[in-house]
Amino acid sequence: MEYIYINTRTVPPWRARIWAALQKLFGQKTEIVRISDSITQPDVHDGSIPSPDFDTLLQMLCVDSDSLKFNKRLRWIGDIEMNNGFINKYHQQSFEQAIEKLNQKNNVLMAAVYLLTADYKIWKQIKRYVEKDRICFGAFKPVGCSEIGYTVYCAAKDIYLGTKHFTLSDLADKKLITPHLFKTLCTAMTIKRYGVKVLDRAKADAA
Image 1 (spheres, rainbow, N blue to C red):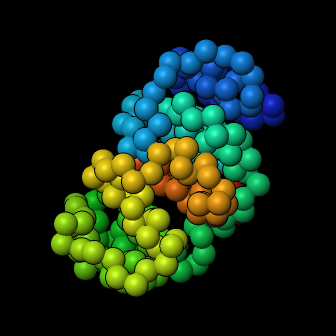
Image 2 (cartoon, helix red, strand yellow):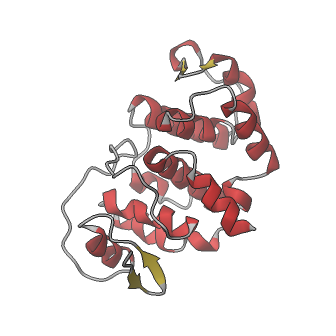
């Protein structure tokens, strides 16, 4: 397969717009079709996971973004260290235990559960409402959660239900979203696009 090289980063030409999108990511002037900057923007791809490393896969979210602030923050996402694609060991253990009984082919479900397991209090409260192929958000309201917990909860709803608590520009706000939380949210969007197997790429990169 041929690859496109931009600023030492390697990207396969799996979309016709990838060249323009990566030019945009690295601050070069280019024209790109305007797309909604909601994090619920539908993802369309050929079903395969491109070959680049995990951080580059996250940076490829710029293909569906018209937010300059978000794309600028994506440029430096490789500087945020997260072992195996998770915030901490609890996050990884909770997620891996949870998906054993869930439909792992449901990308939207996997992305939402990835976010919900990132916060101990939120996951402890909501896990009883998570079924094999759905999350019963309507039967649950968070209680006593932290700002981070509420953020991952709202982001999970956006991805799963199509609500619009956050836009990509909101996620780019460093005062609102911490670096590790930003990478967690980008990972969830990448899981939504390619499926839970993208985390295998993160583990391979961390090895």
